Structure formats: C-alpha cells, structure tokens
Length: 411
Image 1 (cartoon, one colour):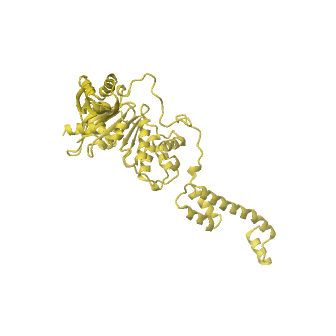
Image 2 (cartoon, one colour):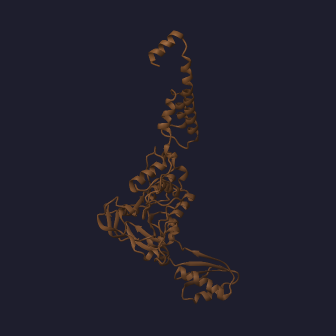
Image 3 (cartoon, helix red, strand yellow):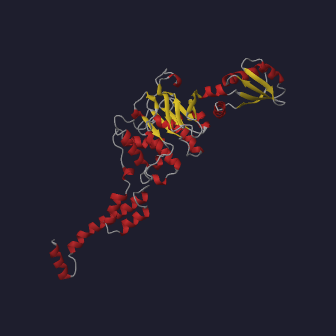
C-alpha cells in the first residue's frame, strides 16, 4: 500500500488496518528471534571483537532493533572460530599428522655428527667497535640440536641474527645447505599486535611464509606450541610465556627445515620450560635446531652439539659429552658397606683410574680418564672384588662445570 494511502487510512479511522497488523507479526517474531540468537551466540562465544561482551549485550538489546543485532553479527562476532576447515591442500600434512614429523631419516642414515652440515660459517665477523663477533667458524649438522651458550654479551644474539640474515657480517661467509625460505626464526622477545587473536597472528605468518598451506597448519602450529585452547584469545591478554609460545607457533607454521630460537625458555616457568624443551627435543632428526640459552642444564638436557661463545669468539664446538670429557676430570664418590681399602687398592691399579683416595671410613673418591671409562670400570672392579656398594655418585660431570673450566682457562 502506498505511504500516502496508509497515512490517509490511519488518519480517517485512527486505527491501523487489520491486514497491516497481521503482516507485522512475522516481522516482529523475526526481529525477536534474531536478538535471542545473537544473545545466545554472545554467551557461548569464547571471544568477540572490539568490545567486551557486556557492551555487545547492551548494543543488541537497546540499539534500535534489529540494527543492534546486525551490528554484532557483522562487527562483533568472531567469525574465525566458526570457520570450517577447507579441503586439504596438496602440500599440507594429512589431518592428524604431527606437525613436527615431516619425514623420518632413512634407515641406516649416519648419526647427526656425520651428516652434511645445514649451516657452515667461515671467519664470520661483526665488529661493533671492539664488541660483537669475531672469526667464528660454525658447523651445524643436519638434524641436530645445536645449543649456543655463553655469558651476557658473548655474541649469541649477534650470531643468530647473522645466520638468519637479519644483520649483515663485516666479513666472512654463511653457507646454507637449504634455501632461505626453509629457515624460521623466533626472537627472544616476540611482539605482536595486541588486538589480534593467536589464530590471526599465526595465520598472518602462514600467509607470508607458506601461502599454499590452509588453516589446518595454523591449528597444528598452535596445538604444538601449547596454545590450542587459546586460539581465539586476544594477544593483549597473554602472559610473556604465552607470547613466547606464540612466537614458536609462528615459526613452526611454515614447516621449516632449520629453526633458530633465541632464548626459547627465558620467559617460561619450570613446567613451561620442561614442555618447551620436550618439544625442541622431539625435532631431533626431523629438523635442525639452533638455540641459545643461558641455562646450561637446559642445553645439556636436549642438545647433542654445543658451541661456547665468549667475548665474541667461539671457544668450543662439538658433542656435549666430548666437552665434559675434555675439560673435566670425571670423579665419583663410591660408598661401600665395610672397609674400602681393598677396593681402593684394586681401583688404583686400573689404567683408566687417574687418582684414588679414601675420603672417609666407608667412602673413596675415584677419578677417571673419561666419563665412559669410569662408568664402565668402577662397576667392573666392584663386581670383581665382591664389594657391597651403598652408593656411587658422580662429581662435577656436567656442562656447567665444563663451561666454567673452559671459560676460566681461557681468561
């Protein structure tokens, strides 16, 4: 009915036509149903955009219907949480496949130390007026976990930035056994836009480094980093440890061959550190990881190769166990039930024992040429003598002691 006829009808009768009221009932029901749907969706949503939930509820209820509900649907509703995964991309892993396992090493493949290097540097130097990095020759075998340790200012971050090409060396070369797009980096303090959700941050990283992958890679990266339940949360509400995990998820989303991590456990509590170290350890043989840390126990726990930096120079690189064997004289305290004199005499005659001395009525100290020699030789002597062992505790056979011995000897 034209507006002027409707107006004339209302003016003449004072009542709306019965047909108009009948036509408006379905419309009113639809508006009420839309408001109810939006309120229920708002209550069930884990996250919404731009405004707190209580403000969106006020908008839905008190802004002219149905405008408030429509504003919420198009502006406030977090559509990413409802996005259904699309069909798998040909290059993406099959559903349920672990993100960190691209392909197992073929049977009979050589150990990590004998594999060709992924990263090699020669005379790598970055001079900041007496500080920086000087003449570093690095060799990182494929599939290894390489830990960089050193005191503050030793050059760890500078070396990692040169390897990741975020800085340029003054001289020297960096050779990669892989292409640059197979390298991912996670800095020690990642920073992200606070208004984005965790899923949006990782999806942005995916679009930049691996646009061929679909949303499953984003979900897998978040799950691997321990943020699967926080995908819809805003980054502004994350703790520093969660931001650290988010940085790792961004690095993993492109399935890199080489992962460079700067202090990956620095912001985590003990439980978080253990989870992060377990995650990194699981990459051995599938990816190559170079990480820096000032926590020597963490390096010893997961790294099969270690490099020690001091004053910008690489003092040592090699197997962690070789470092301990080279710079420490392994020692054990052996406590026996009874007089240990006979056992001490037997130990003294062994070619691997460098020193044997009695330290108490029932305890002797045994120094060996190497950790392996002591671990094999001490039980053999005790068994041959029929001695009753109460305890056998190693002394100073850890990376921290070797690190202090090495850096102290070079001062």
